[in-house]
Length: 252
Image (cartoon, rainbow, N blue to C red; front, top):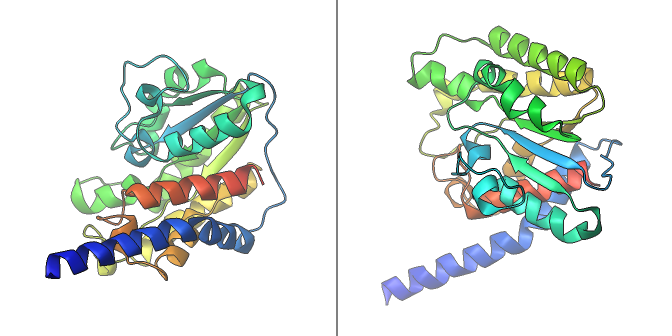
């Protein structure tokens, strides 16, 4: 009987969370209102870049756009599915080049081949959690200044090479209560990384996607472990929430 009760409780929680996702996304975007939205032309190329949250287990050898092999199983897949459905007439070409474990300097090392070569019309970047996390767990000696300077230089290089690309900077985030998050070690320092990303989005006239605000709101309705077991990598509801927030912020 206890097992059945737990099953029913978890099922109810899942249903509640999925039903609330659009509402949570709207609240987060409204709180961080930005008048910018991207314009999608026919045959537009959309590229997602970042670390493991973006990677989502994609197949490195994949070359064909708009496929699960290319997009992985993370939020880019959920986002792409909606874009391809709503804009079928535009014949969008959507790619994912996120790589697990990456920090900003590692993006730069592969930027020419994994970003510029695609000449994206829309370039979405989510990077930053490893730039701090790995100072705690991987003997990485980077600092906030290194993160901000590296990201600034990467964005400037991108603007110089792709002046017409529409930039989307996604907010690095954590969920307090996740198994990997020791609040005494993560906060308030990690907040400064989030602020740096937002500041650079403003400087480079990029759209800023407020993922942290969305997850903070989401945790009012279900615990952190529902959205992300470790507080860094989103589970199924967390990935859907990220897609909803991205779409509402970027597309309006």
